[in-house]
Length: 104
Ligand SMILES: [Ca+2]
Ligand SMILES: [Ca+2]
Image 1 (cartoon, rainbow, N blue to C red):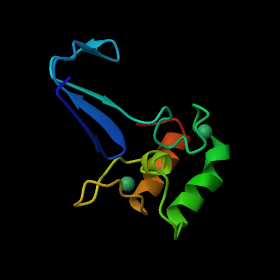
Image 2 (tube, protein in one colour):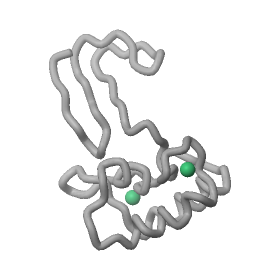
Image 3 (spheres, rainbow, N blue to C red):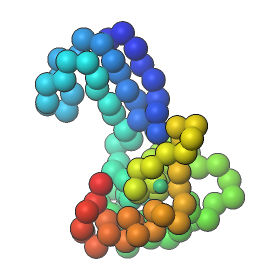
């Protein structure tokens, strides 16, 4: 491994890694939080319990934690500075994920 960086709340390692997640990758490996996008309470399932937490994250006036920034950014987009963008565009992605379709 020759380099490490955090981008969009994911750890990205570059160098001589031979595997990442069981797949061969000669140059890069990336790792996000242990919970998928949309799974705000990190219990490994996106369900009704995540709804109020998603709304809280979406409407929060306070900076989100790294995990919240990742999980509430359901569509996975980033702003010009490379930070997770949690905004109204994530609502449809969250609903799709909640309904079991197209969950990132
Ligand atoms: Ca959950
Ligand atoms: Ca987003």
